[in-house]
Length: 130
Image (cartoon, rainbow, N blue to C red; front, side, top):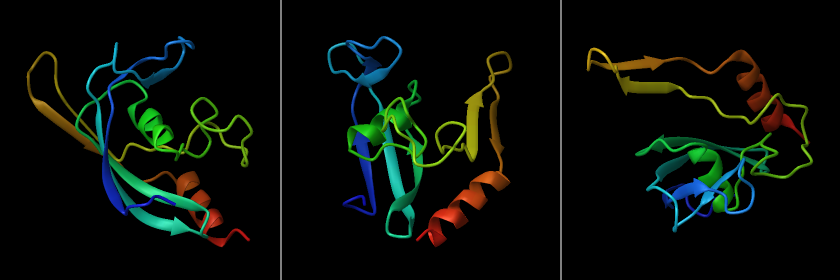
């Protein structure tokens, strides 16, 4: 369980010093990265469903920051445990809102979507897991 129901993780992110395929908190070669998180629900006292809002957009930012504070994403064998409890097709991570400035028009564009059905089913499964 996260110690606080909400918080901010700050840590410069750059290439991992040994594993070049990974990113890591890297003060020497990293770039500023800030992630705000909020606990939405605790699922069966084992898993925590969170919302993250990014101030920056670094590669693997949420994955690196959550693993850094000891709470890797479910289904993430790169930054979390190698042995996965569930047969998932990647980490349980969904972008509800994406926004950016269009490179040609300079117009801010934002897109929002609901959770996919498999995500809702997994949340229900985790809530009811014995």
